[in-house]
Image (cartoon, rainbow, N blue to C red; front, side, top):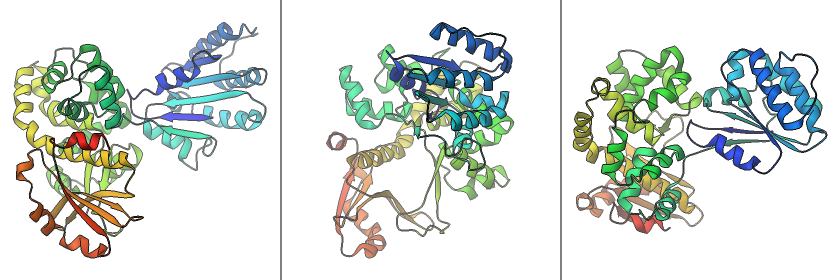
Length: 416
């Protein structure tokens, strides 16, 4: 039993179907319809694949799943069940039925059972909540993530469109999500200008994308979640600042955004105690951060199709917006290098002595401390060294390397 989860557009279905290519397989899509109609559709698919005589009408998924288990004791088959979380709304007892039948048949079945789900919070609940029937049943859980920077470079090289600037803006706007990159490559939009033009066309697939992928996750309280994400996209990274603007406690929302929905990340300064209260929040998904910052925030202009106005706003603000994204790109490049066991940021209370990257290799006892700037002329080694005085005291027997990083030396790290 395998589970594939992750945000929408990440390629879960494509991956599963590619795995099943040229092998005997069944693909069953759980659409939003009554269980009896869903079962009718599934039985037709099973009969077309197996030419198996089925007597009488089957009206529940429990019987369908038992039939699949019986068939898979006779021959090898890959069974893909897509949008598996939808059973939560159709008939929750399906999960208990599957658990009982899987426990009964798993030692004699020849099936590779693949469950795919887009809504992260529900898939996490179904398979990783100890109170749920399918907890502990999956042999592997794959949380599919966007392409890393090295893959983005490879794609751009394939299209003879690689420049470090193109890679940076594709990373900023798509976050490495395969579907969005597929749209850009088909349109041959690789530069910042062409990507923004494609983004802001009438009927663009990107205009309502944030709503499309999140409203179902959040349900009726999506307005509060959207307000929090909009403020995070503007660089308001502290809970207290957001609460003062919204004039309400957002603790429960923040916790769900982090743990249930996996949309934001809490960061503490390197070396801080786990119980310490000095922390900041960030949107993990680059595309959603860009969407909330420039599209959702200007939804009135969107509704009147005033795209030239939004384009001016993007061009006016993109330089300031780019700085933290370049920092994030370097963080990912340091992670890809596999040279460091700890990678993070450092700052002191009141946002004093902020350091963009602290990368620690405890095995070799060395630390890289780096400043990241879009304009490297504004970065100074002596200022970086001054800001580092307190943190390096905790690592007095480590070799310290200071680096100034910008767009200019991105190629060097893309080849790490």
